[in-house]
Image (cartoon, rainbow, N blue to C red; front, side, top):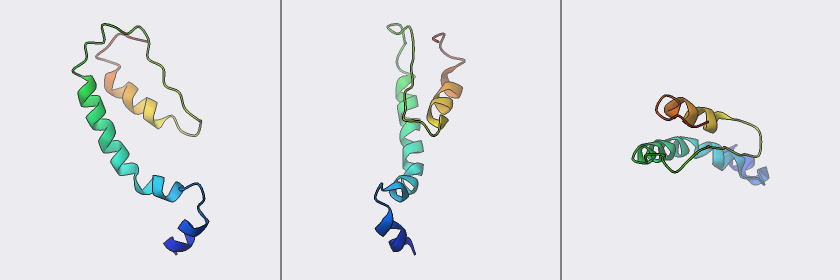
Amino acid sequence: MIEDIKKYDKSKMYKILEDFSYQIKDSEIIVEESKKDTFSNYNKIIFCGMGGSAIGATFVENIIKNTINIP
């Protein structure tokens, strides 16, 4: 059945879903690395996307909203 899905999945969405846990782990590394930054050179943070889900931006917002004073 999975092979049938992959056969007709021209956009490779199945692969994206398979890799989702790796994306979460990568985001944790990015957040940890960003904690080393003082954010002194920033005055705004903007998240852009193609629509669908704001989960990425919400995830980051919840992690940093109490530690930085940037809109």
